[in-house]
Image (cartoon, rainbow, N blue to C red; front, top):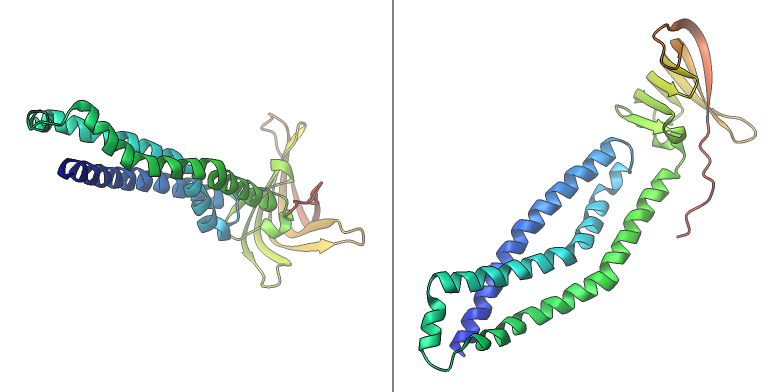
Length: 244
């Protein structure tokens, strides 16, 4: 009885310590990656905590499995190195087979938990994470524009940077825009701009008092044009809605 209690207690303490260390490392790496995605405009900054929770649930099952394996390995290795096994063997009634039962007693509940996480929780969390990304990807590109951040729109062909947005979201200041296509490259800078919607629902960014640099793809000879007003259509309508 003392042997089993001491072994299970040591397995629990070792597994808890190993899981805490591994989970902290994986959680930190995931947080940094998700913050990078939010800074790059690939996910909504308001969903960072939600995405971290989903990522943690996805990684929970493999982390528990690794922690269980390392805990059993470290406990048995320490027992051999400290000659504890020799003491138990010489005390009578304790053989190598006797170690199997307490190890299984400790491992089976964790194995069942890993099974539930792998079959139910992790797929659900992965689906929620993918849905959150898809919903944000299908949001109106204009709604994704945020001050102080580079934002890709129109499938990555255009990159916007704006320094300031008005409270009603219709006026922007200090605009930087790059547009790349198969035939040309273009850079536009402007002091101010407006977001307009025509009768058909198409959205335009109308820039004021700026300059446009345009050159054929791969060329360094830019054509420079100063303008008072420059309109640019943004194709933002999603092809299909996300089924919630």
